[in-house]
Image 1: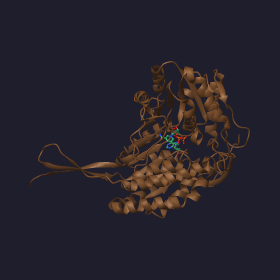
Image 2: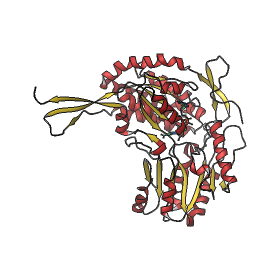
Image 3: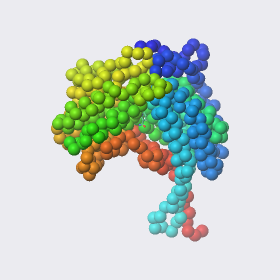
Length: 467
Ligand code: NAD
């Protein structure tokens, strides 16, 4: 495996770190390795900018709409750079750019409304929503632009300013996005900082930050929350998932196989709410395994910039090692690879799309988050057993139920312990819906108006009817 990895600067004092193309495993660019002691000045500028930005809602709406237009106009530059550093097929990068613009547009037009408090007393009390101040956002490498937008669009629309730190694995498209947005937003309203740890830790615990909004893994989420406790900043955490898909005995396997496959393998399985476990009735288990394995064997795997590629590489070397480790553990425990089960013999971080059958229920590929192109398919005997297994996890992001009788499927979906449950789909999200994992999958609510209010504080004015 190539040894170059992000986080390793090209030279001891260069002040930059290398960014690797996951399709080759080789560095192809560098990004600034910003030092934590620069954060005082950055957060100070975010405070300065906040004064003007919070004062004029109409100007904010106009600026955010212009920002959406600017992102769309820069799509031809943003998408290939995103593919180069992240690995995903170019069409998926273009779709991510489009979703980034869509988020800006959605939140540009969402304004908090003053709310009267009616409790029967002769007073006129009203909630007027106020922004919080500078917000820190820390995001992972799987959807760098769209997850950044999920942070900055509601935060800025609410009248806050933001300091945003992308993952060191994918800093480049976010930096370019920052310069595109700089043409539409006043200086200091959104600042992108890039660098290795402890930059994120210091940002999360910076005393000038009033809200820390983090997307990433559970252990880092815990560290971020502990850091933010120093200044008692508000914390929003969008963390990992181990979503189950429960197939009922009336499911039409041929009809749903494509949808189920892509619900697990889109973005090479590196999706927080990808299907990460499938529960199939024992009677249909082999048919489900074969249908998924057929697709895993025939899907075109390659560099994201190659036309025709449907599945790119895993994003980074540590993540590839994790996928390899979990698969090896499952195989050693008696699982059978109906497709894949190994790295591809080519440069870059490629892993063969893998379908695992006969996996022990306590194997880490079932109980933890594999976050890669590997899918275990487990057999169950009763629906109660399947629901219990689906809920038997520390995570609680999403889940799905698949079947022909929609009422029955919905009744089973209603029993899933998670933030969103789908029927015959998975991970289809609306900008207008709340996004809230339970258990270790998250704290706070993002998405829709809830995402806006998550960036506001209630300020109550209490006034009598008469002097
Ligand atoms: P990660 O937790 O390793 O890193 C996330 C971000 O935190 C990166 O920017 C990283 O540089 C930074 N970071 C690392 N150490 C830090 C520290 N001590 N303090 C502050 N910041 C620190 O996660 P990852 O590997 O980049 O991303 C994969 C994870 O993200 C998966 O668990 C996935 O499920 C989760 N995820 C969740 C959602 C969601 O909405 N729930 C969406 C996408 C990804």
